[in-house]
Length: 330
Image (cartoon, rainbow, N blue to C red; front, top):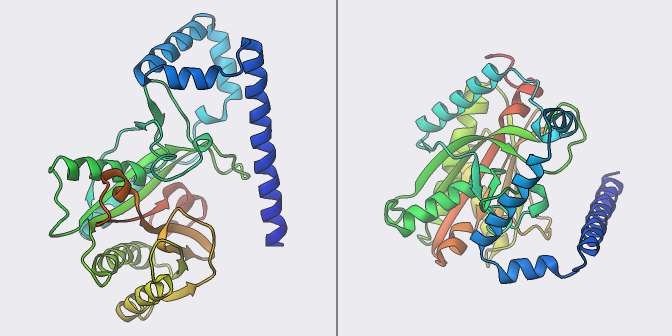
């Protein structure tokens, strides 16, 4: 059954790519220059392209009427509000940030915008799943990539020091993503809570053990102690570490020793997933996968330093409300 679902998903993705390619091809044919995109991106600077896009946007809006704006609102899925209670969403965000603060994660209030390419260049996410904008920006689609950029900038400019002790941060954002959701309960924008831990390679997987323990401590405190749920944690093997089998086994033994009452499951099935490095962990509550995280090489790439280490993880706030996980407290 799962295989047929995956096949349908792949066929749908291929069809979507082909459709987009055909549309772009038709547009370029109308301009009379099939190399227009390549010429613009190679001959013009980012600031020149921004100026051109701003002029194009202004020209389009000058031709619009108030009725046109209302029609666009009616047809555009990205601008519709969520039906969730905003007070409940904010209550959950505050509860998670306060719990994270108690677990040693300092909170950061992120901008709703991020540099163009923040997800596709740093995290290798398809740019079509991100809402690109003008002025070299995109709508924030993932807190973790922005926290990685924030950390890299601070480390580079020596306003953040992760050499002696790891730096632990948390954030919540209303993120927007371009992919389609099958359920009417989900809209393209949702509240995402994330935590990240940044440090240096200290040998014997010292950073990795300490960071993943810190993340588990938070999720056990929040979902287990505050919400009263039983957690199931899967540790999934990923490439990126030389001894990947030994690495995931040591992470499992370390966590199982500290939290013997938590259900940890190791999945050694190898995949072509290149998003995470070494270990990807997922936490499920009542068969609902609510947490996704793992080690990534983003700060290594941003700073050009192989010694950099980064662990990211996150949980959907809206999903907790939709699935009733918070019924006991809000």
